[in-house]
Image (cartoon, rainbow, N blue to C red; front, side):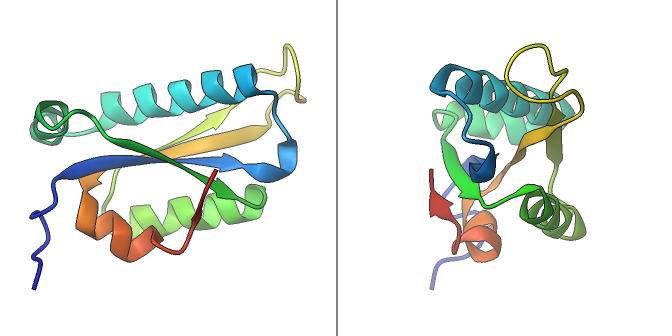
Length: 120
């Protein structure tokens, strides 16, 4: 049996599929989420994650409602999160929540909570 912590650390990035973001915009929003969550994380978690190569998995969620529901699940489990709200200078309206990052956190823990989400 695999114990929590045996598979290392990773970070999940959840992207709203309904927005149809262009690739460049999507990449920028995902990067914002990753950096923000990393800055909020415990130093020991970031250090362990960095030592393992900083794995990031990009997943899709259907819409804002699902994005916020998944973020709340992470928060309820004590996992660091960051939701990105766009300024609206280019593709989407100001205040649009585009994506979120969850972790870095124990990979098994994230798999248990979010393993049913689909890759982007």
